[in-house]
Length: 51
Image 1 (cartoon, rainbow, N blue to C red):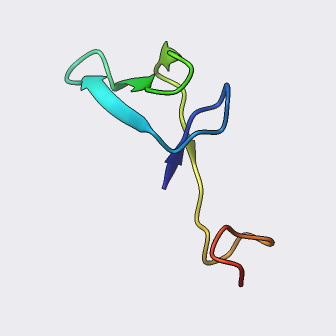
Image 2 (image 1 turned 180 degrees about the horizontal axis):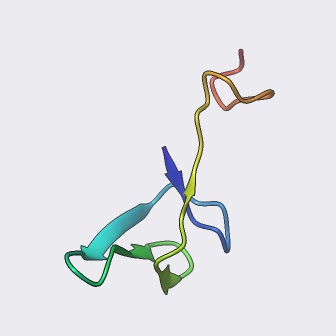
Image 3 (image 1 turned 60 degrees about the vertical axis):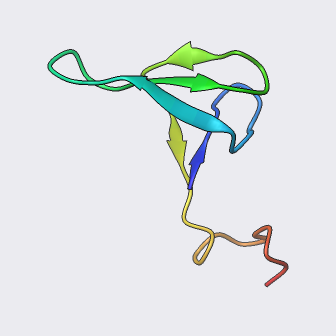
């Protein structure tokens, strides 16, 4: 799952890609950038599924 590095929202989507790399935008805070956080909740302690 991808997360916004600014606000932590999972509502991020790719707006561009190709030879210049990926560019993402957050629906919640408006962050736009190439840096994005990828989280594996199956291995993360205190995940959102309550496991």
